[in-house]
Amino acid sequence: MRVHVIHENPDWYPPFAAAFDAAGIEHEQWLLGAGPLDLAEAPPPGVFWSRMSASAHTRGHPLAKEHTRAVLSWLRAHRRRVVNGRRVLELEMSKVDQLATLRAAGIEVPRTVAVVGPDDLLAAAGKLPTPFVLKPNQGGKGLGVHRFDSVDALAEHLASPGYQQPVDGITLLQEYLPAARPFITRVEIVAGEFVYAIAADTARGGFELCPADACGTDGGSLFSLREGFDHPIIGQYLDYAAKHGIEVAGFEFIETADGRLVTYDVNTNTNYNAGVEAVAPRSGPGAIAAFLGRLLDEERAR
Image 1: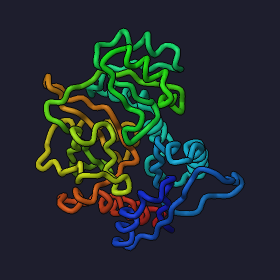
Image 2 (image 1 turned 180 degrees about the vertical axis):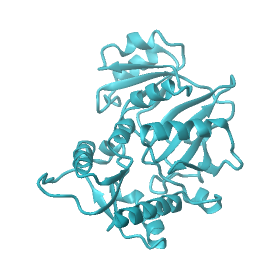
Image 3 (image 1 turned 135 degrees about the vertical axis):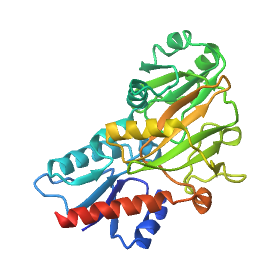
Image 4 (image 1 turned 60 degrees about the vertical axis):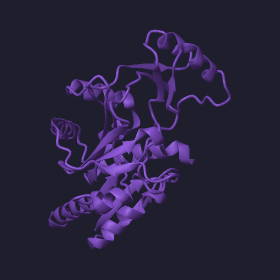
């Protein structure tokens, strides 16, 4: 009986492995992306934690998401306990899904136009105020996110060798949100509880704000603990997570120059920063290990 961690990037695993080891919890990685799945076999006993990333294709694992969909369906059919299961995977893979459901929950999100295929991008961009932001619907770490100050600048980008169509064919055009101060906030939740909030420096980091040590940054850390953060948005995030079956996530928002608090991302394969962890009141990986340990005990008692 152990924890099975479903993902595709072993470089992100050491902090979680250390937390499991410290708690005395047996664990193993399921690195998905290729290989057979025998549907006649039953899954092993234990608890399964899915942290598949929408950016898996950027690390040479283009089939990892489909592989995970198949595995999660198989686990569900056998009634295995899965943390961040099939519905959560779909939220991770689609910012359209995230933004639509956040808006429905009364949480403010950026004005967004989703464009399927490349042909209508310029026409759609022409209906937005400038500057505006282009980003892939399915992505992560801020990759493929660009600000444009004019439609002509976007046209040049689309015609350049550096332009890559999004992996699922859906591009988001969003209003640009000037920040009141040059950082975004990420609110970490585990098992229905607020763990802590971090601030990420956008002046130096731009759009690429992956907190994991494996992502690497030059010139010092971009991340710091946002001490004493207490805001009603935390309760809204917890309610949203409960409604959609999200048990581990980081919610990202920006406080704008005109006084808005705008949520733009739900990261269900959240990573943690070692510098923040060193000073935080509680550990993110530690909270996850404790939660999954409790679930293991429940499975043993069944």
